[in-house]
Amino acid sequence: MTKRPIIIDTDPGIDDAVALAIALYSEELEVKLITTIAGNVGLDKVTTNALRLLQFFGKDIPVALGATKPLIKAPIDASDIHGSTGMDGFEFEEPTKDLVLKEHAVNAMRRVLMESPEPITLVPIGPLTNIALLLSMYPEVKEKIAKIVLMGGSTGRGNMGVMSEFNIVADPDAAKIVFQSKLPVVMVPLDVGLKALVYPEDSEQLKGMNDTGRMIYQLFQKYRGGSMKTGLKMYDATAIAYLLKPEMFQVVDTFVDIELQGAMTAGCTVVDLKGYLKQPNNAKVCVDIDADVFKKWFLESLQKCN
Image (tube, rainbow, N blue to C red; front, side, top):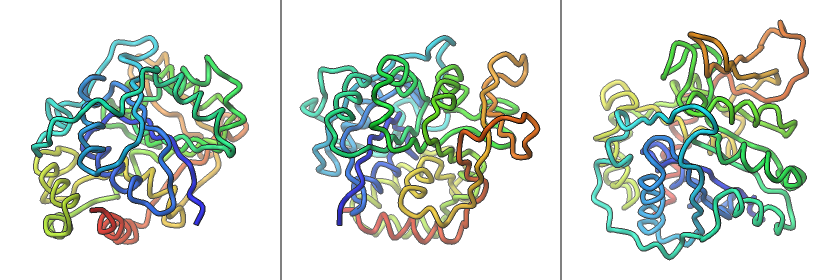
């Protein structure tokens, strides 16, 4: 089987850890590069977390450090959800820095894209600063990008503001650049993540599944994206789910823009589902997910891990 090449841009993050596990053990995906972005916690911490995960999984994927802060606005984080380290709950061994590239993430992405004989899919599951910088500094890479499959945004209410989702409001200016890029963009939003739940009985299965399941189970004890009782929300894993099993989603072609000026709505993804704005479609937006299919896929995917 020919694997599809992808680059994952991430800010690990407990749900990022789950997404990375599934992607790295997938028989269908080839992770060419992991780039890190300040988001859930600061850049040094998320990079350390990425290296911890790669060492735990025994995977030698190059890692490149990206932006330390948003393009314009002041930085925010989500340490209240993921803990002060970003991945509280499991005692990882201190990782080596052997996989860290000297290049900045934007330059590393450009090099990997331009050297690839086939287009590569970008999978940003954190704020979009690195992707926006890449597209702005090196527009020639667009012909080497198959599509951008991102976790972020919302078709309705937010989780960091009335109308704003964390990954978008963390750098709304970057998000606007990505959605205006004229590249094929797939948005897997907050609304879908709210339905992609892992319940207590599922977590119990993880505990005895394998080393990866045990690690994720322990991380889940500290994760505040939902609760162990009512279900934990697997936001970032939904982007990997779209890559591997898109049929579990209901998807619409529509126009998406980012509100930058609204006094109460800055960072909102304006998803024009009814065509009020009379603009051409610029994204595919996942508007629903089959929660039962997701849960089955989620557990089966983690079972393939070591």
